[in-house]
Length: 435
Image (cartoon, rainbow, N blue to C red):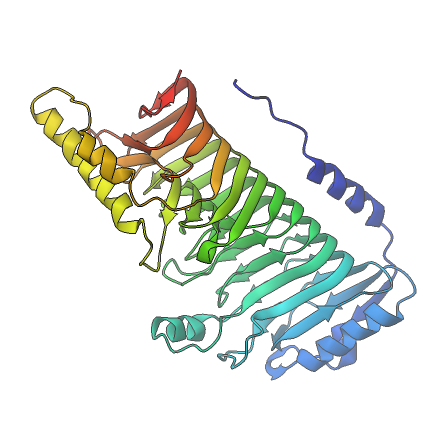
């Protein structure tokens, strides 16, 4: 083992919080007492707003906002804002359904928890984002504003989201931003594989976050960690279909972006477009460091391991053509060498082209892939495509074994400007890393 796992500060913080609030709740505020019908037809937004105002401003002790079971509550934009006087548990026993319409404003969080300290949202209830109308609008390029995230935590501290089911969010199902000390656990999240931008759980500009024991099947990343995230621990996730477990994208529109202390472990990824991935935009600055992927099981994943510093989904980036041309030329050269059963050093003109037109990039370093095993749906199982300007440094692969899902076919690896070490078994071999 090259590096020992360090204790996580986020786990201790949230354990202390959970212990503090356990057994302290007294008063209960039911949304039905404030006019909520729960018939799936009546808009209950105002009733929820009134109930929240009462529990937030009037409670004299830690309390529960109860959403009774056996009902479906239809809601438009609903804000659970603070600060509040005491700790509140939102107990979601019933089901919540978003009003099925494309909103004509830029407030893109359906259920918004904001400016709160010490909150739990939990229960067996289902949260239905009814996103199909938004997806159709997006496909037709007719949407004036961003689609709605189903549940957002903004500027919160010591918060938990536990046990809920989410489906068909218009955009992200759970979004965490500018928050500290958040625990997400035992969620079930589903959306069609073709639904756009329906990330399961998204984290940005937040610290001390734990995400664990979730089943996620969506049309985008199962979990995405973006700029400003620090000390984020993700474990025991079952992901697929979707785009895998991603750090990034970082540095959109040449911005400064950071991600640090991001650790993913003990997770299963099945038939996704990507497995474990770091993606950064060209022309950006900043850093992504102290990142690990440990004990990851892969089944027929199209791109199992990726570091992509040429990320440019919209096209028009300076290095976009250079990066893809490098990849094509490299494999053409390898194929030609295989025909003569001899490998010749990649010609100078290819290496020169791949080093030209440099742009700045987020600096990627101290990245570990340990115990990543399974099958790849593509021949190319490992791609380390690092920027021409800074490259990727201190990349470690240990006990990595990825086979081609097609019997008799070989898995391959590609490196560009990546540097680091490998230990124990690494299959397919990654030539840019040394033992």
